[in-house]
Image (tube, rainbow, N blue to C red; front, side, top):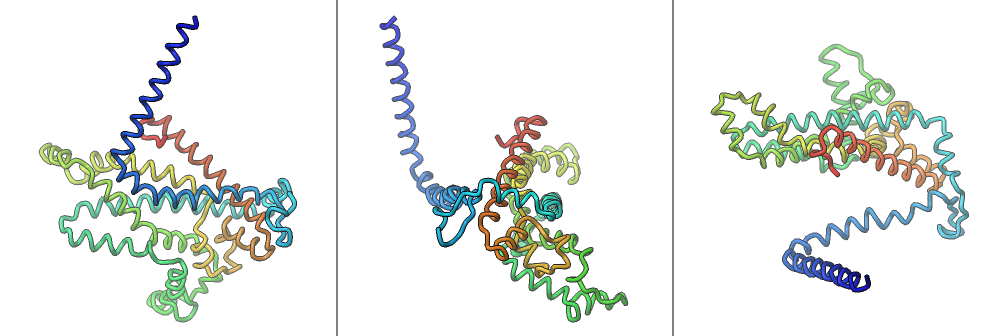
Length: 324
């Protein structure tokens, strides 16, 4: 029995040694790619993993005399404050509703623009349109808020002074009327984000084998059928991956979009107040980083769950297109 066990242990050790040698050989073979990966890995570590040690702040009542480590533990008190707040339904409804709306609208427009640009034959035109579409992505929300203000100024804005005047309409106090802002915020989000999404799908379309299109042309397929039966199915895995990743941010919102663009107008809170803007006001007015940390922790956990749920749904429909 002992004689049988000894060769088995030797075999296991031999396999482990072989795996170690294979790992070192692959590491040396791809050393250049590994070196290129180091900066991105460091950024990921510093920005995404090291801050996770601050999760305990959500369970403390922070005071600046004792410091973070010396402050007393508060248990789930910070979470209780968040869930017992009367504005919880409003901020969650706005956050989730806007996130889903932005995700659907931006995805549809990004894919449509990518399909349209793919039909252009002039490379100069394609590059020009891509540059024009992607430019808003790099503008800060502060700049965008001034652009929106230039359009919506009560007296001198382009909408009141030009557009509405053409149609003999009365000027609108845009920052005092909440009914328009769901559409304004959706438009601003699409204007800023559709371009970068279209570039991603254009890159995916560029990887499709041209022989598929050549065969379709021989069979007499129109451009529309080529898009429906070749282009869209080919980029569907990218669409699904982006959708799954976006679902992780469904409980988060673009703080600049909901705070800077409406100019933090209190009248607009029913349609512009989200979890992020609410947490910011808690942090500035109550000076309590424990409550804001608790809200951020809840957002992260819910986003983590949404990614797994969405991926599970995709796996049940088509396991080959699931992210993991």
